[in-house]
Length: 371
Image 1 (cartoon, one colour):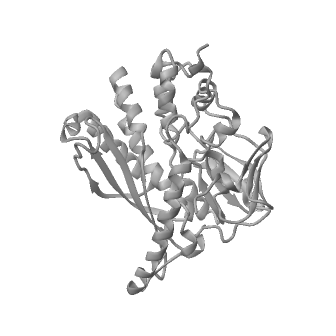
Image 2: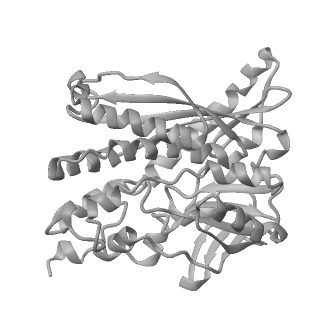
């Protein structure tokens, strides 16, 4: 066995260093917070507790407005390579991924998504000449909007030769939503010891960790065509689209279930379960089935459980923190919307940390610095 194949391919070794990225995020948040005073002239005010959460919230009087912008990241590179290898476009699927990155963040604060805007920046106008690929992007984008019940308001399609690589496209989406009634706001004020943690199942890798996943191809003799299951190769498994969780949060609101807090399990993996700024221990006692593609990555990248669960969703796509008495009903509502869910843990008073008991893993507060 070569040294290269024996060495663990961590997210850091694949080229992503959150220790470098996160300080900029924190500096930007601090500068941004100083701009909140600019809202006063309009007679509105920010919800300060939304700073550092997945979406920003403004109080406009009778209701709250929430907003978010997110990009797809490098998943489009996988779609491009699979088109080269198989002739099939996957841009309908990654359109859903892009919208999911924005919508799944927006709903964490209790917002109902209303409007999505598109940002499709190509490396040149030639990208749009492939009519089949372009139409797949349009069709997938519309289907995802319809699934979330949002209006597609418009967007921007710049040709950025010299900034975006020729033949490539950078996809992003912004989303605006409404928190109405205001009591639906879930930025953590009601989170308390004793709350249950309900996890919604992931469909696969979603759109986080793709840098490592793409780097792993160099270690696979069959590359993206390596079999992951009897029906999916590696490239196809990576391109399974991210679920849209908005129908679940809307159904919970209609059922009268009060969500105390919510977290979209994206970058930083299960460390995201302690995103709330307070000092709580998140004791996880039940693990989801790990999607086949993530088992495959963990095995072939030689990642231990700490690295895998600190990087990938490992089967948990979204976390809902609810009163213990509402936990089973929360699971039932999610399943009725077609999403597998389970009661996976409990919030406890104590040091800020995530305990994954079945694996004996502990992630401490110093391992997630987002504020």
